[in-house]
Length: 99
Length: 245
Image 1 (tube, rainbow over the protein chains, first blue to last red):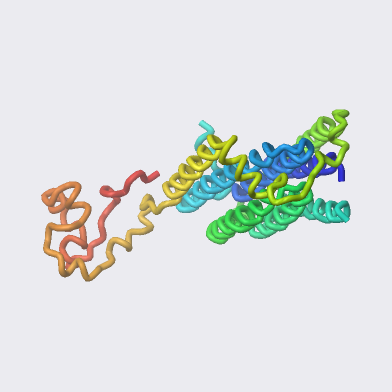
Image 2 (tube, chains in turn yellow, brown):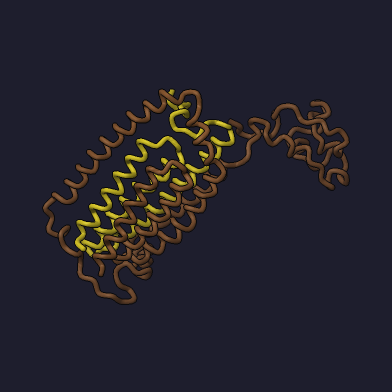
């Protein structure tokens, strides 16, 4: 398969994740959709790495996975803290930082 | 053969992504994401990225998804009760508008990305990629990636490890127990054998920090201090409540 097919799949996955981030209200699902966007970016990184026969893209994909794991850790910690305070688990209701 | 495998895996990837976005129960969304990740690992294998595919399955589908499942089991049943509240009607109407505008923006983004990626006219995008020769240290094997990570990208590697340490500490600090709403008050009433054996004025954190006189001045105060004889609960969280927010 040519590289263009992989790039098309990565674009579709990225846009699906972006749609979910804009539409869903549960912060858990918003985090999952962020993972989708990062995975779409990872797929295109690895496809370009294969295109040039160069390993830099794969290393960058591993670093992206590391950053995604850190983001999940912090995000889930925040969700657990919100749940402990009996606040609603809803990104529309959590507006303390809005000013 | 490889193109058949590509189409099967691509359908799995896109179906998993759509399932994450559309399923209403967060638990099913997590399971759809696991299916998406496994299919994506197949695509990585087709692109000769063996180490990244293995890391994807082990780290993501193994570790991170277990964390998600735990948090969803702890928190996740909130959504149904919140949706059926008093403000259901206006919320449903605004949900439709939000879905429509989200779909418009995501569609525009998709068209733009496809134009940028596929309409670029690059010759290399149409090809099958660089020539590949299998071997023990070939492109994408763990030896190749490890060699890159420990020589050329050493600084990036160390920065990533530092970032992981910071995230672990931050996660513990964020999710630790607080007694902001006095929900763990009964924990302080627990009587241990050490409370009976220990002489007065030794050992508890309040005495160590604020002095014995202050602990007495506060009244009957700690059940730990007087051996559990008076089990009066401590009023308020004035001591040791840390950074309650």
